[in-house]
Length: 155
Image (cartoon, rainbow, N blue to C red):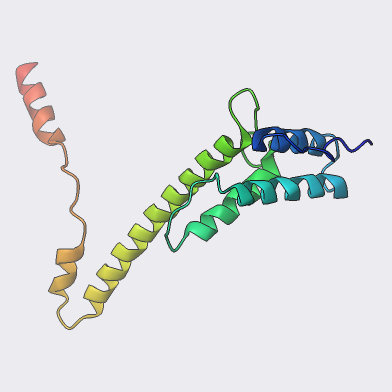
């Protein structure tokens, strides 16, 4: 097969990435040239610093999940939705996915912190402190009261 993206001087980042994606799609899964194209895309995007960045302890994990998602779904939908060039650029597609992974990891970190706080309270000398740390139950609708009223109103 002919290599398409050797000379891309003067191309924008998006044009280079799109060219490499189109070339990668011409090769079967596991083919060396396909892997080389995907690696080039990752390097281009990393160097461009166009993806969302934040200083959180789990950013690198979210970024790693994003690159894995990219490799599994750029050419065919393996674990999610396949990239569709008509809906946006590769960078936009990856950026959106990265932000969702960051939100997932942020939520998980908050849950873990809450669980740790409860466990620490349970292990303390004063177990009543643990009760204070438990999240409040959501209000339970008065189903019994509503049912009773309904029966009384409509014999």
